[in-house]
Image (cartoon, rainbow, N blue to C red):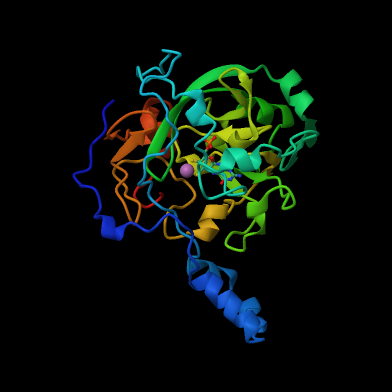
Amino acid sequence: MLIKKRNETDIPSSEITPEHIYMSRRTFMTGAATVAGAAVLAACAPKTDLRGAGSVSRSQETAVPADGSPATPATGQTDELGDPWTAYESVTNYNNYYEFSTNKEAVAEKAQDFPTTPWQVAVSGLVRNQRVFDMDDLRAEFDQEERVYRLRCVEGWSMVIPWLGFPLAKLLEAVEPTSNAKYVRFETVYDPKNMPGQNSPFFDWPYVEGLRLDEAMNDLTLLSTGLYGKELLPQNGAPVRLVVPWKYGFKSIKSIVKIELVDYMPESLWMVAAPNEYGFYANVNPAVSHPRWSQATERRIGEAGRRPTLMFNGYEEQVAYLYEGMDLAENF
Ligand SMILES: Nc1nc2c(c(=O)[nH]1)N[C@H]1C(S)=C(S)[C@@H](COP(=O)(O)O)O[C@H]1N2
Ligand SMILES: [Mo]
């Protein structure tokens, strides 16, 4: 399966937002209302109005990371498309994890002492068997397997990562969703004492993500507890994170403490923070541009130049059925 490459060249550098989060209308308005003692106005306004203003923006990746990653990782192993695994050093030192830093190269150090034991994951909502799993339960009940997946960040870079984990479907089967369950809602731990980024007012913490139940049940959807044969490090979302390889990386929520089966489409942190950018689905799609840059190509970490982005990140055969009849330009 080959992708239709979008006939669009790189956006001019004048249109690239600098690599920072900026204050936007929503945050500004909220702040102004408080200062003016008119908080009642903000409180009365429908939530969607405030949210619709948009508050935070992503940046396209522009700089090459100083991670010193070799062009060919030492392992010599590849994914099913023949692409080499990204070097362990890059996978563990070039991270998006806004709870610690918005600087990808600062996350590893800032997260190094994050406490990940003890840790529990509560599975609740529209299920027959509500459960609270200790990490040991998860490891004991569900066989860990290695899955080599491409990770494509919405910012325009990608990696090939050998994850350890188990299909989310196995855990969902164990809790038995009821017939009313239509979506799965995931929540990251809320721990502002140990996660400095959670003190930032620019986001509605904790980080939340969601999947449709059939997306969650797809065999590709993984709950990961490790990579490169080792336990996850904090910067990669220890002790347990989601990996949804056909969607932009931000859907792969880290450090999960809550999984809820619900009958409504969950509103993710990014849907609240940047509603004009991507919606609930966020499937990798080279034909649907970000409002400020093309998604037709990506930079594979450790490689020179850019390569074409594949529809559904190269997993079209496994997931296209989920979106039959849907307009993917509308439901992005
Ligand atoms: N809780 C949480 N999960 C998160 C993020 C985050 O900031 N917070 N960043 C996301 C983004 S944008 C990406 S690209 C991936 C990066 O995963 P990695 O650092 O393990 O490569 O994590 C995703 N999961
Ligand atoms: Mo990302």
